[in-house]
Image 1: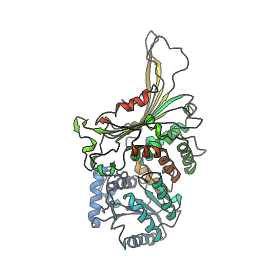
Image 2: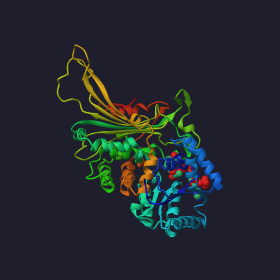
Image 3: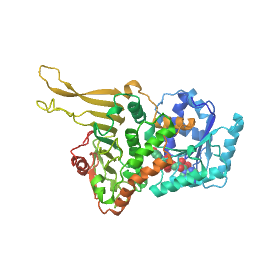
Image 4: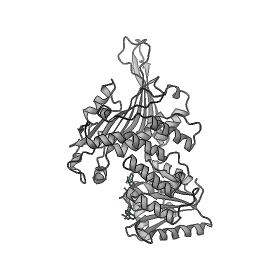
Length: 493
Ligand code: NAP
């Protein structure tokens, strides 16, 4: 349990993220007894709610979105009394004074200046005014006690991310800033480090000596839904590759830190991002594929094409699918392709990492079987949550026939009700543990990696925009990206 009394302030407390993720996460932490004994949550928004009205709204959302929806009335009542709604306009003159009064009142009640966690769950254009106002009012001045969580997107390109970091660093110390990437809170993603660094058998194989290629897939079955207006200014490269997929890449490729300590882990991740080879503009077509979904079918239902989605420009050139190949120029990974793909309206919801090992060097079984397969390690992140290692065995019988089999570790079997990513990240932020959050240099490096691609795609000199039918695995060009090197997508085609 986190012990320090804390005031939690949710800017955007009436928004979608607060409704679906933040309040359910705080509530589950509360009933699992992870929250501090003394805490308050102040939810801010311009919508008009009475205190009772806001609590009723939170209760409705918990019933719909909380992983634990069989809670008792008593549990709800003791949680609900921690919530205060404050009608609040970020641009309003007295807003921050009113907030300050509420924070001070809780300090008085607790007889000490308690910790403060400010969650900025608002559009990025508000980060400037919120952080400047917090600074001006001196509300987040205690470096050891006060933390600020920033949601994605963190910038729009490298220059805007650098500017945002500078702005935040003017108002807060780096150790107070928690840039969230919810993928890092997922059990299965965190487990990559345990799997790699707490076992003797895998790490010695974890390099170009034994690994042929690595694939990272984050496929979504949903389209842009009602977020077309936002998405059309973003696209898959910014919305997914720059953050989630590159963060997963770091977990898979980083060297072992000397200790499991925040700054050491983040140093190792930053090293990997620095070592990712930057793609030259004239090579972009060789390394990347971008595409948009057209009319198709998902789960038996017709799905309209991206350009017909509400809020999307009918002439849009925003990509809803990206496939790409990266190289990491360090001794461990020299020459190993890291393939990534992500898209919307795809055949399945599936996030996974597949490590494809090299073929056995000897020819012992070269004759008499065509079923010899290189070993494959699959780390399923969602919706399946498991690790699968494929290896060859002799098929039972009189002749020497080989057969691939799998060893499986399934998360659902051992922890069917494991915490959600936001729960993990919120408890870490409450505890002041920034290991799973992104440091400024990591964010800037990740933008740097995609900078030439962003620029080239804007100009469109070398890169066509392919199309794929909604409900498929993307355009044929994404398969060709791999087949040129004798590889193929292994999770599904
Ligand atoms: P949203 O549903 O549009 O909510 C925006 C929130 O901002 C509302 O609570 C709104 O309050 C508040 N707001 C807007 N203008 C304000 C003002 N002048 N003063 C005070 N409050 C104001 O957005 P969201 O989906 O929750 O997203 C919030 C942040 O999380 C964004 O940065 C988004 O990119 C990020 N994010 C969201 C998701 C998600 O699943 N939703 C996922 C990843 C990242 P009122 O309406 O009451 O004014």
